[in-house]
Length: 495
Image (tube, rainbow, N blue to C red; front, top):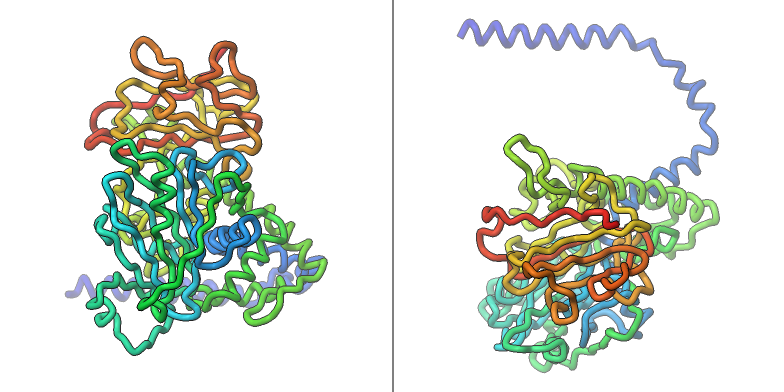
């Protein structure tokens, strides 16, 4: 007890001593008045700073707005419509790190008029879905399909708007068979990818997509037909662009959703950029200039986060000493976020940088729960540890025993846009293309990456006309593959 009292006394004494030391510096102003007078155009400098921080903070929300903008601009559609493909994406489509092997279905929706129903079809012997319904911040609400809440039996996912106080309680609605979710935004999105069985085709996936229903609970007794748009041949673009249109997206988010407690500080800062709840967005030329300048720094910060080791990604294969066995990387989510369903919040903070540069700068529609049917490896560097040079020729050997029960895929993405490189004939290759590719005697495949195809390697070549990175996907990864000793070789310069 005496020891404890002595320890407390010492702590108090140290605290008082520290305070006394600080108190002696009260008259040391550092000449702040004169130094601050040297700052030029404070108003503009503050607009630039707030544009930078707002862009990083709002990255996931702008990405969701861009899906709706694309539906309206490129497809003549609107909110609550469903978009689908009858063949996979290609280079004319703008979609953050989408794949080129499955025929997606997606939608942008709102519950502002009232509770919203998303009806997901039951799995068949040909098609099922895996994917996620997310809120306006791209934060997962629930996964669907066999690995989701409906367990492949199909389900009516009911999204209650913020502050819902309808006649029927959540329990009442669940008793009626709905999968009910209380939400904190009005706007939502979903992106579903089909799994195909028993010889099913993309045409089967397209037909399956047209069984998705989106309607309001008030219409549930006699749901109106859902409007569908087929986008395979349309240059649909959902990418964010880092100019003043980025802040149009921010404004659209603000006008279409309630302001949550965790958003209030940044919403206050948006006023300096001409963005205010309930008011038209009519920025001045100075504000537009500040936005553009601020976005350059915001992009630079998110890009740094994306490529710097230990930020967005970490090495997948390391030895007992922690040394890298290969250059392949895996996403590095903040501890506890995957288990919590990726809210990008803790008890003490909003994980702004990790949410942006670590995720939504380059991906969308994270699952509510990890462990689905796909594993992703990120490629930034070659076997020498140098970042890929798009002017060089590289070779990737994909082993015959690659542990993918369904198939494997490798796709080239633009380092600038984080989407497909535009105007190329091929964005990726997969084991689904095996019939058209050259196979090595050991059953492996050599994939080539370069601006022009190496002679005689055209069937195994992916063009790289600009700076790029790779995603290598395992579809249906085999159980225990990470412990099996299998390793994907590095990209090597090819001469």
